[in-house]
Image (tube, each protein chain N blue to C red):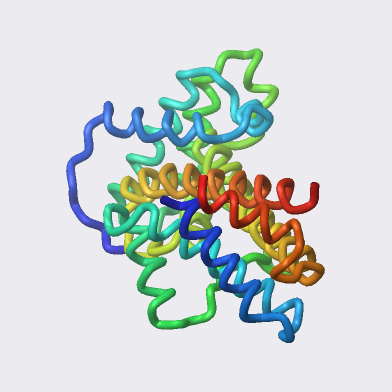
Length: 133
Length: 126
């Protein structure tokens, strides 16, 4: 990690995190919680982490986790087993992986379909017409 | 525009690979998909620049798809950022803030590409 020492504002972090969050489909967003405050705390956690040396200690992690959890309202604490930052990142990683898998799957299926095509088939015409439009 | 590039690539693949294996064709389609994404974002984004570099060097397009299950205990906060870095092209050289920004754009592009491929599939198979 290049650890550029750039001062980033809270607003920038919040913007980034909500942008990221808004790109997750609804079903995944639910896993994180729509509570803006949680997200803000996640952002703060990320900000803290990015300002640090990579070697973050177990104590610091535990502290972060309890701090985050204590800020959650009682009703939400049940839904979150671990720190929000971690959940957000985890959901994002999981989502990207599933998108990669979809690209792979669609490539396979397109390949299969194309095997049945020849240049005179109606499917080839469809592609040609899509190209023209 | 992403769609144009991808469709043209598909057409070329279809014309030139009548005798090649299905998996070879599938790999070419997959490569075309990521190429379209990279070209649509151009050089504006770190992830697309990294992807373009990879494509031009003709390297195998690989994102770690499967983390070995055996080696995955409970992951901590720090590790998730590292996981994300491996998934987003150019990730390893980004700081956490840039990583989030690039991730957002990358996801947007990925979903558009997936939707495009689904549309093509639907048109062909109808």
